[in-house]
Length: 273
Image (cartoon, rainbow, N blue to C red):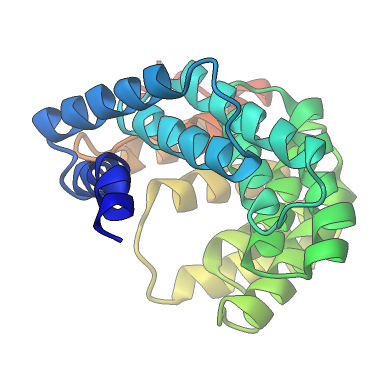
């Protein structure tokens, strides 16, 4: 009846406010979403909320944290969501893999906690994909596991996981059979590091001839492959410096790839330091 509708109105307003803030990213809209979320947290404090209600509140908390670029709060919300899934295996677990993937992304690229990311991503492949079925999130996990292998200097793993990600993206995301450029470059890196130099060069030459956008991620991956093909660190540094543009936003993935180059003796590159 109307009473039930009125009781749900504050929650509906909060959800709408969150969606508006996520769309506009306007400071006033984000501030309103924060206020409404804080009110919701105060209202439910001490109450025995159902697992689904807790999940909804934590999801809102995570959204606000991501909008305000509060990494610590985002990680806390994701860890609490994952713990909630583990405490209540009886509730629908669809979305558990997404939570693990989102947490892995921060843990690996922003925090550099490679082993922790490896554990989370392996759970997506070995637990979530088995229980929930493979999907686009499985492909995302395979891509990140290629980067985990890169950070661990596991050349065979870089290649194997890149190939697995290519196959999964083709199956679940409509990706090209030969794979996206970034995955082909990860595959080339694995080949170069395992001594399959001709195959690596073929991929690199093929991509150089194709019409591709000169993104920063592309430049970083090409630098890693070139270095593995015994191009000098000084040459790679100069080529990478030329690829930096002031208008390009440097992401945590870019910084992760650059750290791999730094470890190999490349740099410094203005823009990263």
